[in-house]
Image (cartoon, rainbow, N blue to C red; front, side, top):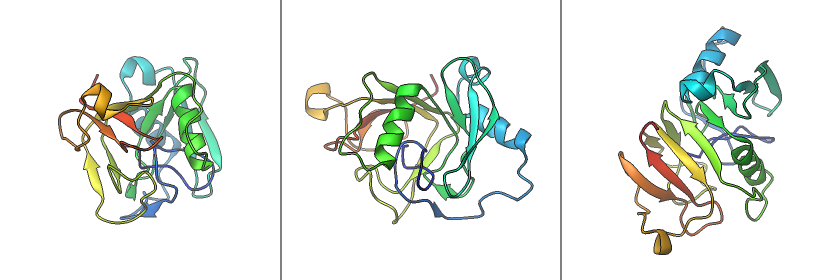
Length: 183
């Protein structure tokens, strides 16, 4: 997935620079408890239960909904916004996502980033990390490894799949492994 990401400052998934609403973005009554539950549903229970939960508004301003203790941060996303889906990320994945939003030429994380999107996701493209329109693709529940991967040396497909493993954004510095199953 990684086509999310809130406008401007950070996040989400792992990668379109603009947020494009396709439906309603959730009700104004989308309270703290609902956001925490949505964020926690994105990760395995053993990770989400101790993760920091952070929401972002349309300007990228972050609001901590709950502190965490395990180094993971979960985001509730915004329903109906392509690429802004619930996810739980480790510190390396957060670095990767922030590098993307800062328009860096390549990620600077020094270890693999891990992203869980166990409620599925959406994105504008499986091959272009900068796509911001088109026919949105729907991704099944999955997790990702954000680390440079080459389909020629790894043997992984570059074709999106509903099951199995493939490389998204192949041939770009933002290539990463999509594992379409729950861990």
